Figure 1 (cartoon, rainbow, N blue to C red):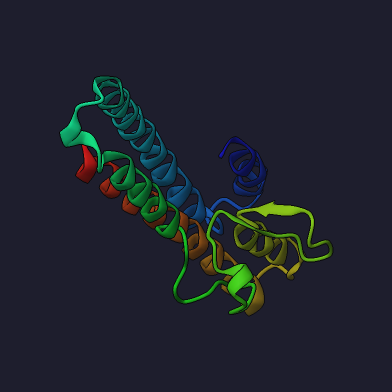
Figure 2: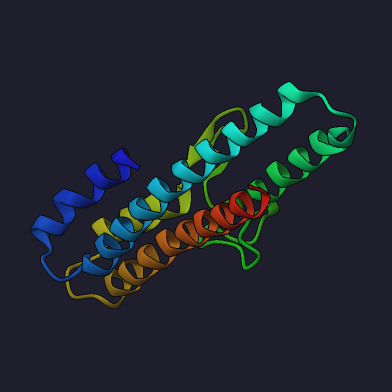
Amino acid sequence: MGELGRAIEPLVLNEEEALQPAKKQLHLLLDKCAEFVSATQLFEREHIVVASTHSSEDRMRPREVNRRLKAVDRCFINAHGSSAGTSPLKRHALFSLHDGDGYQSAVMASVYRQLGHFIQADKGSEARQAARRQAAREIAMVQMGVQCAINEMQWFV
């Protein structure tokens, strides 16, 4: 998230109003990420305590933990696709394959793609406004994924 903040900050300073929605979404995302870290730490402590007991009633517990972790990953799959297209490989809000090389990954590619469109578009153009709105939406999609993941982790504990 630090890289995204560093990418947005100079743009916000130069474009006072233009990227405020994206900056606001970024701050909300950072708050949710801190909440997610707390939920995962609680999940980890609970899992370690249960794993160390090895009681017969906890035999199904590893299966449930694995199911929860898979559910957390599914939280970041955008059912509507992204601005990158509807390819199944481009639907994950956090990680996707690099456009030019299938062996490389890209982190939050749709967010960075929209920031690139914003930078390249002429000031005041409709394309610039559309990229601004879409960048905020893409950040919000990541934020919704984090909230879903928090819910999955808290349900377990």
